[in-house]
Amino acid sequence: MKPNINKHDIEFLIECLKSGKEIPEVYKYALFPTKQKEYELVYAGKMRKEDVLADTEEAKPVPLQIEKVFNGKKYPLYSKDWHNLLVFGDNLQILKTFNENKDPLIKNKVKGRVKLIYIDPPFGTGDEYDGNKGQSAYSAKKKGADFVEFLRRRLILLHEVLSDDGIIFVKIDYHFGHYIKIILDEVFGKNNFRNEITVNRIKKNVTQQGRQSIPTATDSIFLYFKSEHSNLVNVFKRLTEEKAGYWHAMDSAGIRRPRERVFFGKTMLPPDERHFSFTQDRIDRMINEGKIRLNPSNSKPEYWIEPKSEMALDTNWTDIPGYSFTTGYPTENSERIYQAILLLQDIRLKIRKRHYIE
Image (cartoon, rainbow, N blue to C red; front, side):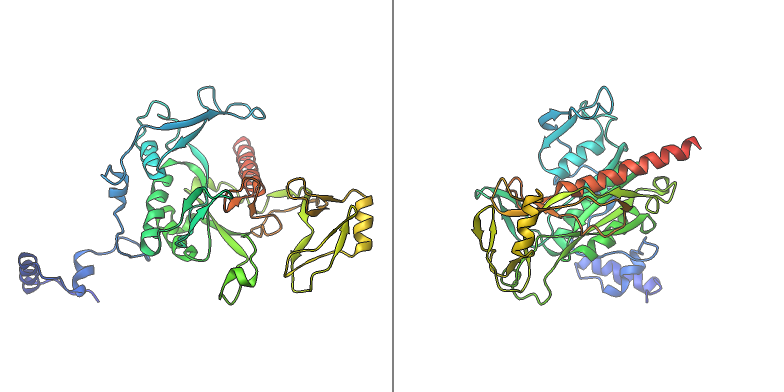
């Protein structure tokens, strides 16, 4: 319960300030009433939104260091004066540059005009990640309140970059997912939360998982609209996706004892704790049908999963790989995750266009 500030309280507080004494916690909300309507996440080092947006010594706008300017040949330019950019640098500083909106390369082209953002930040695990050749990849060393604030400051600036009808996807795991959900509610507004999408993560056996009693199978992607202008129609009830066919590894996680199988005359034994899903007779039949092959990169057997007919797109995306291993970069997102997100955005814009015409 917050106290009523009277004359004696004022004199006491002045004396505390003069003498350097700590002000009792009971005065906190009387002196600094919360501006949140319902709740907020309070933690050490939380910066005011106004200070995040202002220029500070920690993160100032910087000239953009362009690594590459490019545009795919498959699609036409979005506009004649814009090409896609690969920018090198601290993303907080780069976002500050976007928000400042003075750099001639991006002036009036980025701030408030971005339709879709997808981020896959570090998960606050405290780990360091290396590439497949030992090169340094990225750090997830920030933990606890430091990690939450690290991400919050970037989300505040990303909010400024989005257009009024823009949407953002934020991928996170169980370590800080619930904290980041509250931060996203603060930054984008609780009413602009649209859903939590479930995606696969890299599967680990019991030894890799350590002492965790229940192995973690999924990550989350939080989806937010910037404003009510993003939600002119109920998009998700009308979204459909045609599931493409793809090649899938023959060995899958399981508890059966390993069994030898013959592929194209080559006898193979799956890794420990894994088994081949099909009998030898079925394998022979599928080879004849062209539905089994040896992976060109690692010579491991994989089988073809037939494309499915059009089906409703919901929040369960565990039928597609969450990660990929094409570059050797750790925790590389699969292209099919990006395809699903871009499909969702593409159909959303088409529905909005029809809405305007009608």
